[in-house]
Image (cartoon, rainbow, N blue to C red; front, side, top):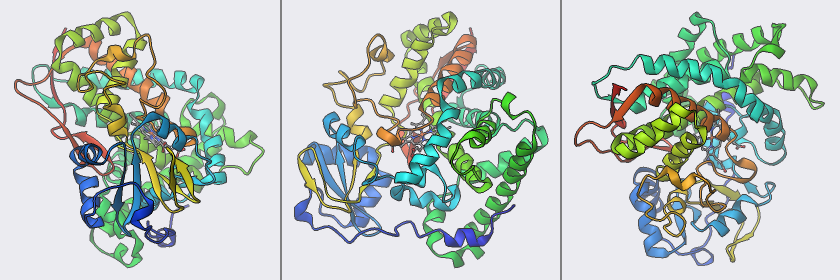
Length: 455
Ligand code: HEM
């Protein structure tokens, strides 16, 4: 089975279904600049723009975003965040805001669904991410992380982000897709890499199917077709395999879940869409969190020694605290958004239908009343205590909370364990890094360079 151009043409432009512009007076304050300028500031310069808006307008403010100058109201206090995460999923939609990803992820994608369809997709995927499933993946992650760390050249600075990206891609291919055949892996790697690297400009042009005959759009469609061919071949082989129950990867688990669920069985197209979603949502995000963790440990000898001791002792809780603090200080995703399908009151503010609302993860994680000295990297914040509810939200929340949160923490702990057991980590003399925007995520601008020496 292959995906035809029809399917791409069928995808709605990403702004389909939005309501008309909401008048200023009914919304919290915000800048009055043109929506285009605000969108650019939010997308390209969010690390300066959002804190500046918070300082200027307070804990709740409105920005206007393209394409139609839609209102996006950002909240920064945990009690407001709680109301958003607890909002009725029938009326607090998240899928619409992700529609731009439709051409790549496919219409069945968990990220694009809302209400009943989202609930069904989530029910199918959840068993592949429960505690027992996560434990069963750890061995493969360990093996891949050990092979990656063994290949590092001591004394030569390198971009930890690139190495972590290569590693988490391998993890997805083996643990999520369950591909072990070396030839198929070799075919998949470049196809998957190109899919992950699709630029927002290509996605924005998707509303115009004629573009698919030209330049980057054509390249993207061709790549997508080739990726789909390999994935559908893998799905067909796996459906025919007699040993699914003995396989531990996510795809095999999804196929067995489909068997005994009394709902309609999971189709090939749906499987493909969910796998591509897991790939795109789970690969660079985890790699980024890991590279910041290595960078921060590399800058602070005392924290490094503490984490190495934890690695030697098999103290997973401490290594998990390192990952959590990395995700607090450097949120990979700066905010999550819900689209109001009917009027709602949040933080005592009445908001009309059609408003987009969301907590700013950036500001929430930097509030000094919850995280004293918020700029400092201190994993101890997460030892022996949990942060107050809704003050640590790198994975979003409510029924949409990241389905891979446990997976990525397990992966982070396993990788840190393998690296820290082997190496002393430092950053090159005089090197500093800061976040830059890459598509919807924030990554270390200079790749979070580190140097390792055998211990
Ligand atoms: C550090 C790593 C990660 C971060 C920071 C992260 C962050 C997020 C965030 C903020 C959301 C939106 C939540 C919301 O709207 O409330 C999300 C959703 C999602 N994430 Fe992750 N994620 C990470 C890793 C992963 C991994 C490893 C996977 C899968 C293997 C994954 C799969 C997904 C999926 C499928 C969704 C959509 C959930 C839904 O709409 O029901 N993520 N993630």
